[in-house]
Amino acid sequence: MNWFARLLTIGLLALPLSAPAQGLFSPAVTVNDKVVTNYEINQRVLMLQLFRTPGDLTELAREQLIDDRLKAQELERAGLRLTEEALESEMTAFAQRANLGLDEFVAQLESAGVAEATFRDFVATGAAWREYIRSRFGARVEITEADIDRALGQSAGNGIQIQVLLSEIIIPAPPERPEMVQRANEAANTISQMTTTGAFSAAAREYSALPSRENGGRLGWLPITNYPPQLRGMILSLDQNAVSAPLQIPNGVALFQMRGVREVTGPAPEFGAIEYAALYLPGGRTEAGLAAAARIRDASDTCDDLYGVAKDMPAEALERITLPPSEVPSDVAIELARLDPGEVSTALTSADGQTLVFLMLCGRTPVLEGEVDRGAIRNQLRGQRLTGLADALIADLRASATIVTQ
Image 1: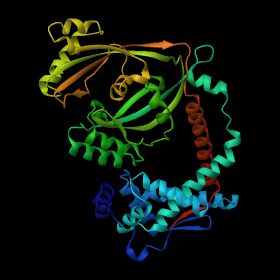
Image 2: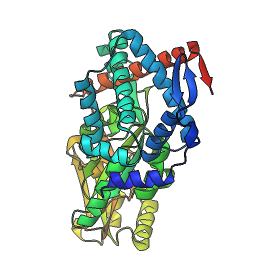
Image 3: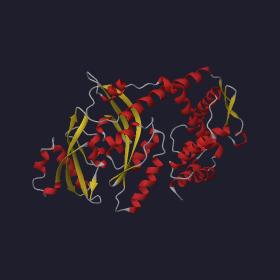
Image 4: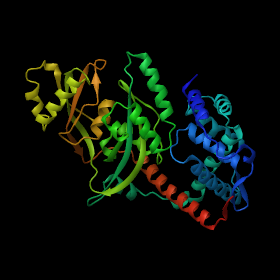
C-alpha cells in the first residue's frame, strides 16, 4: 500500500459525518438559486481531511463550496467552460502530484468514499476560475521593466527588495540508508500536497531535522537574494500556502512553504560570491557534539576566530570556502540563506551522521551588474496582482449574493 492509500485509509477511519445519513441530500446552503447539499459538504470535508487540513473542516468546506457556487455562476455568465480534454489534463496533473496515474488516483479516492464526480467538479471549478481570472484581468496587469527594477532594488535611490516568508522542512535521507531514503521520499510526497500552514507546521515538528522544527519550520522575512539563483524561481513561483515539490539535496529532502511575499524599501544587491567556513566536529548531533558546537559558537564571532579553535585539529577539519552562489551545494546554500555574517548553523552532518558540520557565514560579496531572473520576478508580481483582483471579485460576488444557510 503506497503512502497515498495509507493516508486515505487513515482519513476515512477518522472522518466524522457532518449531517445524519437521512439528510445527506437535503439543502445545507442556498447561494442565489443554487443549492449546496449536505452530501457535497461531507464529500469536501473528507477531501480536506485526507489532505490533512486543520481547523473546523465542516465550516471550511461550507465556505469553499459557497465560493465555488459563486465562481460557477460567474463562469456561466461569462460563457467559460473547460473542454473535456483540458479537464482530463488538469485531473491527470493533480494525480501526478501524488505520484499516481489518474485512474489509480480516482480508484483510491472512490475506495475512501470520495466520488469521481466530486473530484471532477473540484478540479474543473478551480482550473476554469484560474483561466477566467487570467482572461478577464490579464490585460489590466502590466508588469513594467520599472516594476521589476524596483522589485530587484536596481532602480535609483534606496530601491525595493523582494522578501519572502517561508517555512522549511529537511528530512534526513542519507544515500547509504535506502530505507531512510524511501521513508523520507514518501513523507515528502505527502507534505508537498499540503495546502495549509497548520498542516505543514505539524509535519515540520514530526519530520524536520532543522532547529526550526521547534517553531513549526517557520522562518522570518528573508531577502530572496539570500537564496541561490537556482532556487529563487522555484520559491517565487509558489502561491500563498503552496508547498514546493520535494527538493533532493545531499543527505536529505527539502520542502518549502510560501507564507508571504512583500516589497520593502532598501537595497537588494545581487551577490557574486558567498564565503563560508565549515568546521567538522566528531560526534554528530550527539549531546557531546552539540555541546562542543555551542562552546565554539560562544567563543567565535567571525570566521577568523575559527582558526584558533582548529589549531590543534587535523588540517582538513576546517574549510574556508568562497564560491559563486550557483555553485554552493544546495544543502549548505539553504542553511546560509538564513544567516548573517558571523552567524552559525549546526543543522548539517556528514559521514553518515558521525560528523557535525559547524557552518558559519563569513560574508556575501555583492556585484553591481549581472544576470537576474527577471522573468521569475515578472511572473511573481503578475501572480500577486491577479490574486488580489480575484479575491476582490469574490468579495463583490459574496456581497451581492443571497446566501441562505438551512
